Structures are given as C-alpha cells and as structure tokens.
Length: 161
Image (cartoon, rainbow, N blue to C red; front, side):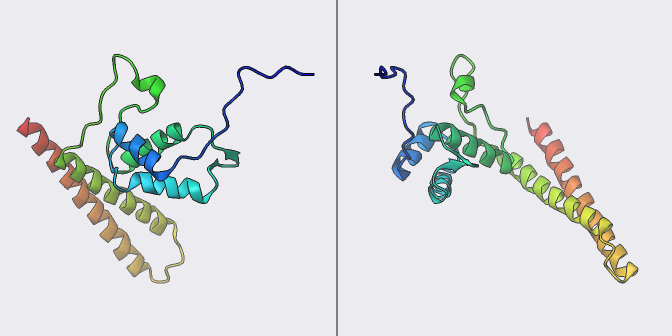
C-alpha cells in the first residue's frame, strides 16, 4: 500500500469573472473595464489551455496578458510577476501622459505604414509600374510626416519639463 503524498499539487480551478476582475483591480492593471473580460472569455472558450497544456496558474497568465496589453498600447510596463515585483523595487503602475499616448499611437501608424511599404515593394503583381511607384511614394511621405510628428512631440515634451 502506497502512502499518500504530502506535497500534492493542487488541481487547477478556473476562476470566475469576478475573481479575474478583482485580481485586475487589486494589481492596478490598466483597462480594468475590458481586459479582464477579454482574458476570461478567451481562456474560458479554449478550456483554460495554454497551447496544448492545461493552465496551472491563471494569475500569472493574467499578469502576462496585462503586460502584453500595455506593450500593445505603447505603455512601458512595470514587472508584474510576483517574484519580480515583490520587494524594495516594487513600483505601482503609472498612467502614460497624453504626449506619450499620442507618440505611441503615431508610432503604431508608422509601423503599419512600414509593413505596407515592405509588402508593396515586394509585390510584383501590380501591372502598372506608374501606379506602383505612386503608391510607394505616398506611403513613404506618410511615414516621413508621422516620424516628424513624433520628433516634434518629443522635442516639445522635453522643453516643457
């Protein structure tokens, strides 16, 4: 007869939406009105699986979700993993300034334009080379304009401090 294991791993229990919302607010993650619901719906729909493996710790998954959402919104996130954030260097989340948000928005537009430019440069299916060149020139001009806006915002933001 085998003896029962003392250090048995606790079986994963999927959180309720209320638990996810409470965790989001407790950790002061941004977008507490939408992100917890998106997180919960996403994992609920795929059976709380991470790839092909069952989830072990939904709190760490939620922290990663919030971290990536902040990066997508142009926010430099602070560490959310408890092992990184607990201790003397734990810092609360800080909302970005309006200028930082605007710079991030313009930078996203520039990234999209650069991706479009690369696609058009590689696309040889456009039959009229004149149209192709007009499109490429137009995209390049938009990139230049947006990059100039970013420079002006950064220069204006530095002089205000």
